[in-house]
Structures are given as C-alpha cells and as structure tokens.
Image (cartoon, rainbow, N blue to C red; front, side, top):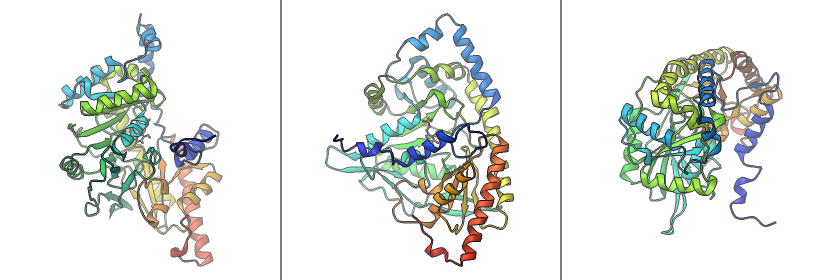
Length: 431
Ligand SMILES: Cc1ncc(COP(=O)(O)O)c(C=O)c1O
C-alpha cells in the first residue's frame, strides 16, 4: 500500500520509538535498574495531595460527572485555563489572559505542533528551520518534523569546573540567525544535561529572537513556577509576547494525565487551538481537574518549592557522589546538576560508543539513554556525542546506586579492553 511522504516519520526506526519501546518493555520488571526513563519520582506528599484531590472530585455532586462526561473546548478546560491565567498574572506579573493559554495532550504534542508551525515550507517559497542554540538538547524533538532536516543546532562551549563537574554554555560565536530560521528553542532546565542556561544567555537569545521577529520557544517542563526542579536559586522568568512558554504537569507528578500547557501570543494560541480541534477535538481534561485547586490557591507553587525541588536536589547530588566513587581512576566529568531529573556523565575518550555502552548495560539489567541521540540538528561528527550517557536519578535510591556501580564497572572494562588491545582512540567506530 502506498503511503504519503510523511509516513517515513512514523516508521519503527524512529530513535525515540525504539528507546521508548525498551523503556516500556523493561519498566517495572524485577531487578531492572531503570535509570533510562523520564518518569518523575513517586513522592508520597505529592501523590497524597493528588489522591485527596481525586477524592474531593469523586465526593462532589457534579465534578466527577463533568470531568468524565464532557469535552472541553479545543483550548482545554476553561476553569483551569482561567485559574492558570490569573495565577500567572497576579503572582508573577505575566501579561496573560485565558486567550494566551492552550493545553495539549502532553507537552510532547505541543512541540510537534510548534515545530511544524514554524518550520518546513512557507507560502513565500522558503523552507524554514528551528534553531536549537545548544546541543545536547531533548531527544523528543528529534523526530517531530513532518519534513526532514528541520533542526539546526550548535556545539556548546564546555567549561570545566571543580570536582569533576562541567557546564555547557551557548557558543554565541556560532549562532547565526539567517532568514532560514523560523524559531529558536531551548529546554531550560535542559533534558538531558540538567543544565540551566544563565539569565544572560536567555536574555541574549530572547533579544536575538525579537530582533529577527521569530518566536523564542522555551521548554519549561522542569522549570518555574512549577514543578520548580531547578537548583540555581532564581526567580520565575517573565513571559513576553514573542516567547512561547511550554509547560507540563508531568514532572509535577502527573505524567499519566498527559497535560501540556502552552503560553503564547493570542495569534499563535488561536492556531494551536485549531490544531487541537483537528487532531484531537479537545485535549483531555483530567490533568486540569487534578491541578485546578492547587493553581487557584497557589498550593502548586508551595508543593513545587517545598517538596518537589528539595527532593530532586538531594537526589541529584547523591547520584553525583555515587558516580564519583564508581568512576574513580577514569577521566570522567559530570554536568553540574542545576535542574531536571537527570545526570549527564561524560567519559572522555570512551573507546566504545555510548550506544554500545547502552547495550552492555542493558545486558546487565541497567537502562540508561545513550548520549548520541541528544544532538538533533548537529552537523558533522563530534566524538563528544558518543562519550556521554544520560541517567535518571528519579527512581528509588537502591536502583540508582546499584545501577551506577554497574555503570562504573562497564566503563572501566571498556577502557581496560581497549588498552589491552593497544588500539588508538582516533580509530574507534563512531557508528
Ligand atoms: C524537556 C522536555 N520537554 C518535554 C517533555 C514532554 O513531556 P510531556 O509530554 O510529558 O509533557 C519532556 C519529557 O520528559 C521533557 O523532558
């Protein structure tokens, strides 16, 4: 059967599909050290809060029936959207109203909409691309474009820090906003690295976007004001009309509700609403209902700041300690954990690819994500791509600690095998 030119996008070879497949297959199996997925921790205080909220929905005369029996409008459940607009406006001074907000079935869907809205063929005959100023960047963007080759990304500057830490910075000398660029996009905090682009970097990117009259898409899935998985001590950012702020209820603890939130200029929001109508009639209302009270009374910010952030910050530094111990004697670096739920480990001169390391770890029941998949749009080969892995520290500490020990053993084994064969770093296979 003949299929359209877009069908290749959804082939079983899509990188994210294969990795999600592995994660789905191994999740919950006894003995598996699941350091690969993006699931948030099951934090009792957060789960307890949402359990109580669910009970209140069930207890009320109408809330449960309304939740299950009605479609929302194509922008999402209006009560939640109104409450969120007021929360962002009164608490954080964002100049937004309900008309600036559209919900999607997970923020992953939002990226599919946005990237295809601002890249690909345009009516004036141009073909536009999305500029990711700093790679590594979120793996979930990779296969989003209906047209091939929609990303341009650039290598970062690498700054080595004390204690075997390092930090990526945007290399502004490489950034060129040509007429080919349809939008800028960054995840902040960044998945996979836990990087938080500095305020100065964000200002510079925002100015560049404004000067070139293109949107600045900010993937705030881990950021402020919720779920606040950001350890740099900063205040919530300000939204401006050229920004498209993408948020999510997933890392707050509700990934099963599939709730993404886009805050954008009204003209953009209207188009997104229309996309929702065509693709899904309306986004699901479950996440909005679960978070409604917490947004109305500000509890969402308190839970984020007092419970969720300290939980992840402690786990991040614990994982760094375990890595330092497990990798002693190796030339390794860890991206300074500034946010998100991952650590990004770099094994300098690793003699096997990160994909091969992934396979070896999988054979020992440890799941991570090979770093080489986190460079959408980066042209040319760069050994660094193959020397990193992303591991989640969100799972229970026993699994994380024992998984990290096995990572240490396998990395050391790879270097030892290589030295034994007396091969040179330069000729390793980077496929
Ligand atoms: C940076 C980033 N953006 C977007 C998403 C998509 O999240 P969701 O579709 O669950 O809202 C994720 C999920 O892990 C992520 O890490």
